[in-house]
Length: 209
Image 1: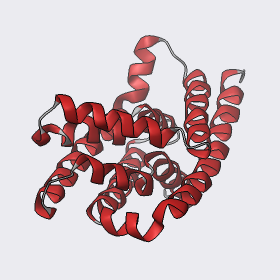
Image 2 (image 1 turned 30 degrees about the vertical axis):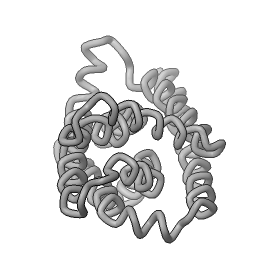
Image 3 (image 1 turned 60 degrees about the vertical axis):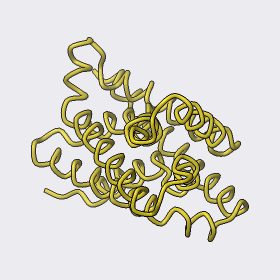
């Protein structure tokens, strides 16, 4: 069965957490000096690696929690709080600064051929927020068929992110500083609302008899 509302909620949560428009200018700074073809290769590799990381957590995240003795209710509360903090950073322009610092550190320590793995795939794309959101969403897709649907949603989110990286120059030029600030704050408010919903659902689950 297809729950359209649930699928839309999952796609929205992932896209807001991944923040493709916000990642585009950082991707440009990471790939300064590379040709368009080289940037395409970095974007392709980074997106694929991040997809497999998130897909693995979507499939096995709840099992890992079970082994650690953590209830899904507790994780929803913790994950919701983490996502809310990310939303707070987005609204008050803290997240962009942190991501830029992570990118600058990586360039000085790693070869350009490895930037698709670090810092692009980890932690800029498949970071703590995206991983937490994926595990939280996995609890809403319990059956095998529903997990397949979640994987498709993750693939769709990653495809949109990949497209944003490919056309990063156009996005950055189109939005400008003001446009990026407005869009990031708007996405932050949406993510904050989704995070609060995760906490509410977690409290209900934790205290359910």
